[in-house]
Image (cartoon, rainbow, N blue to C red; front, side, top):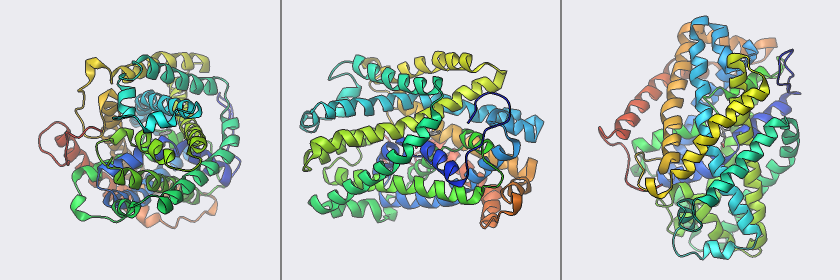
Length: 469
Ligand code: PHE
């Protein structure tokens, strides 16, 4: 893809498009966020609601965003204004979200890099044998001070910036054709190992896969919806930009079906790898945000060859995180470029100036001055605040506005016509219309009000808001 001006370069075709979008979608959302939310919000019931929301609402919103991008040929900051001048601000709302997400994504990417180096250096047993919560003590600076997580944040952020500066997205796409399937094989292999080798694992599997209605809370819904946005890279303009690079003769509907299938499948298998062992190791809720970092060293340390498998696993996770982070950073840089017609280099510098301090704040957010910072249920520290504000507040708002914009201002026809361009079939057209016009805006508004009421203590729809995750 070209970055500056001129005719937009396009993805080569259906497979090229699906792979590029899937590389952006599959990342820490699937491997880190989905498992801990599933663990926290009731296991099977969360998984069920997640799937329902992903295949109805996530699917429809992704179609809408890609169609808007392809129709206008613009990235999100101009796409809305292009369709209806008065609504340019909607693009600005969407564009603001990745700025916050990418800052904390760098920090988590740093943890993954650290886990890779530690396990590669043969320290797996120190991690799994640690008396207490290794991950929590590491990020709060108990183990090696906050300087260490800070360094790893800079390492991961630096890697992403280097990729964006050198414009190696194409290269990343090529490598990810090999590494993504490798990651998939690995998580399937580890899950299979767990099922065969771990005593009592089926209790954990039952918790993870069989929905228990008694576990259903408002938090389950809000968590699942926020996760669909996050995991499918929705409501932040990214898919609009991807759509702008899509050729007219590639089917939007089929592409979206494949992308959402890959993304959901990876999340569910990653959950199968992490949630049941965490459950039987008694890590359920309280490990929350650190679930992947706490449960997996324990799994590896009991596994034959675990010392070798662990670093390979973290390396593959690191790669998945990198592809997503680069696509997020690329989104931020192109927003900065598009918004004021800045040169790309200047936008990169601006991204550095904005994102690095935000990331530093996230690392310090686990420090002694802010140890008890835990206002929201979905995560601790500044990271938890950034995560909740983006995924559970800003994205639902952006999605509601997008639906209303489509239903009222430009009409669903504009989108369905684009999906049907060049004679393509749109099999889920009816569902799409019902979703965008009624179900999504109404349900999301309802959930948003409930969620906000809970967050600000008006009344509680969550279970155990005091649990540290
Ligand atoms: N979907 C990515 C993940 O699951 C995160 C992401 C969001 C990446 C938005 C790019 C854009 O990790």
